[in-house]
Image (cartoon, rainbow, N blue to C red; front, side):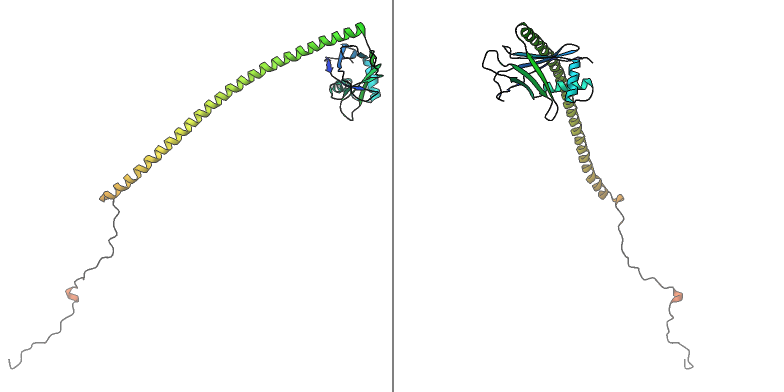
Length: 252
């Protein structure tokens, strides 16, 4: 088990005075890092006279995991510690606060991933003089390195964003050009259809008038019923005219 690619953590904890239960106006900065592959160092300072630290080995952290009751693998436990340090519920509890220049007598760091989850408590010891100065210098350098890394990522993301913006602009121009061409062809087709329809409407009455003026193409008219003339009856069928019979008389 080792600390692999552990990135430094910088957090401003909430300062709580244990005796009064209220907060403090003094601001502190928390720095969590790994000086080597088998140790984790927690350092808290106000950059003036109050600095505390806690150095834990992997074995000590394993014992802490057993005491807290967090299961899972080693990497999952480290992920839980990191998430707890980065949460909004990180408190620096100052104990034995006095009005002297020496400041609080002791301090502890309390971190919790979220409400209802196990709390992680680190007892801190006070450091001063060259040890505190060295820790503050190391914090400042790592903070600057973190800033450069974030700034570099920001520059890369900005360049990538500008490239995407240019690509989107080019695609938008292409789409507008295609849309304009489609509208032009659509209007042209509609115009052609309207012209074809107008020519059809003009030619239809001309054809109709030509059929009416041409007598050869006129439809035959119904002659209607005709009156049949009286037919001449043949002589053989005529009725014989009954007249007076002239006979010679003896007197004649």
